[in-house]
Picture (cartoon, rainbow, N blue to C red):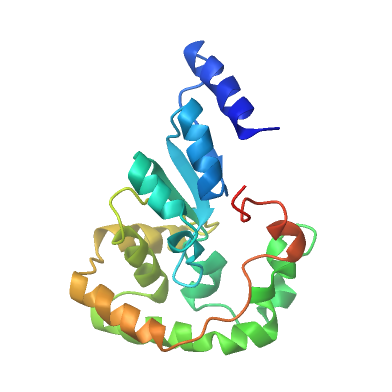
Length: 207
């Protein structure tokens, strides 16, 4: 179904008082612009983190900024990887029936091993700021733009408190961001964000 038809239907529902806002998940920049032309989009949800930065390059963040749309990154802690608490063989912890990460390239033992330097960097940087790797990852996102609001998922109270403290106690200054960027630029990030089946279902082709 053309996105204009979807946006038009939502517009009718908003006008009828049955819907408050219009949001899209994993759209391409072109889809965002086409939908917004029919019914203003309030929020976009897409994976975005220190190890998944495609929204910076595929036009999605640019479209959000130009059109005044909020951006809600899912997986802001690299789907748990950037917290630095997973063992290299953590893939065995993922139930393929309930956890999509069981099939994601980034969570294979070899790829997780190759990406360990990223965790080492976050630990070292976090030690200077009195913060955990997860808090640095979240603070980095919140320092990018005021209209970016990450949604870290958690099932444990201590992780929730850790996440909340990232917003309250960790502030990254421009010099901090430059230092992180310089260090990250020297590291290679391995593995794709999803398997081929999942990638085929999201708006990555610009349509």
